[in-house]
Length: 96
Image (cartoon, rainbow, N blue to C red; front, side, top):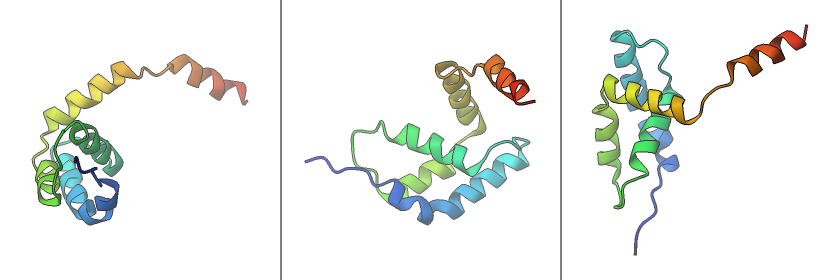
């Protein structure tokens, strides 16, 4: 029987690891990276695994994230879910 992943239950446990990784990205000049972005990246990558991932492997994955992997993921997701910039602009100007 396949075990279900409990990633959300680990969010508080791995929060210091996410903070450390975010600070590392900021040191490299990626100042717009947020904790929620790193969490979403990690969950998106690991939810595809067929086997159960223990907490130590989850933490290891977060610590091994490279900026180029994260930026590739952001770019691909931008193409998957395009933003309608004109719609946002029209809503902002209509409120005036």
